[in-house]
Length: 140
Image: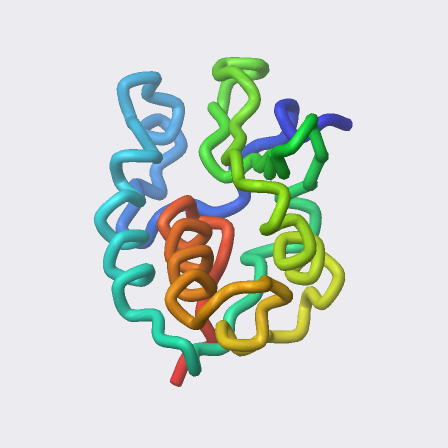
């Protein structure tokens, strides 16, 4: 199965549990998650322990000089309701992205991400992934 065909893996906290409400095409899960994801991303530090939210939610594909991270976090609940979701990174980020996939379900410290850059770049990567809902921090 392609990632595009998968349902989004997690409903937001406070999302309606009533099946009729979930079937409402006007319910935008992305919008519901946005604020929570921003808060999680902003709470990260270089000592935060992070991992993918679930196995199989991402894949990395190298296209020319880019590392494209395809994910199903914001997929539609309707079959093929949205285009395939992806984030584009410089090829320099490929090892860090693959490392997160390879080490799941273990947590990795942000400062230990496989990225040839300073702590700020590693934290920025973790923040982008957390804001997209792909990365979660270990609870304190």
